[in-house]
Image (cartoon, rainbow, N blue to C red; front, side, top):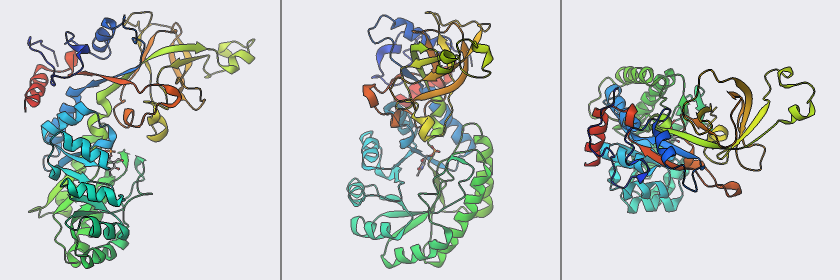
Length: 441
Ligand code: PLP
């Protein structure tokens, strides 16, 4: 879309950090980010790594959700990225929230979100957390085992329980079935126990695994949920809620949505009175965040040093230069270890310039984080310009999911902070107007 500056202040939250004020034309690759950073280049902390969050992307993902899955209410899984502005935007757009802990519930409630827009979607909770949730009015929660039922009966007998069933998670990047989900054979026993304890079970949930790359996993899961609904009827319950969990991927979202719509129509032909919710996490934020990191050091790899006579070309495919950047696997790139991600650096700025010639000669390189641990490798083999040197900037896209939220300060390195944009040059004027309207909501 072509950007048109409407002359207005185009920031959706009045308290957004001021860095991008005066820089409405913000693009990550070719201007924004870069313009903002150039402006800041004389600051003492100008070399710090930083995220850039494009809030218009989150907004667009919400629009896309409404278009593809109009009958499924998204409850954003805040564990994925509890960024305060993302939460405020989604809250203003009317989504619900999936929380896993006391802390997440408190964060969402502080936004003014009504407790009935929260699902406490952790099947194994501390009793004190169940009590605390009850005090805040958060009654909807998942379970998958009998001990949880005893705890809930003591801590919040008025809870609205959702039974999380086990489904096939083999088509996902992060399998969750090893830890959560009741196999269908255990469902009648669990429901009988819930009845005995006079607990209200309102429906069924599942999670096909995070980062699901085969949409058919959703139809199989809906089929199992149907079986669990029938078991509910036999146990004397009338389920009214189907929670189709998370696992939605940006790349195959339309295909997943179509399969899910068809499966729900097939297995739940009479949708009368059935509420369907979902717990998407990475779908909303993965591509909304990028990370810029500074090259803080450079050295030759060991093979290069010991085989000095051989020369770089003789060890085919091996890096001939190691770059050290100021964020790593103990920080934002923990997604490499915990979320099974591979990241792909590109050059953001070289020698003070953001204009990188496509004809730059390349060199096989490796990229490392700043800590003193050798596990801290961001990218073992990649091609980068041969002229790249200390002080230059690398950037990484697709850094919004399961990154900053799980970053540590190991070795005393700070967690990278976030610069916010509303799309700037990449966003249409309609998006920016809509975002502003949302901010006023
Ligand atoms: N719901 C639950 C219970 C989860 O554990 C997770 C992720 O671990 C999610 C939702 C979000 O999953 P995703 O980010 O793949 O959509």
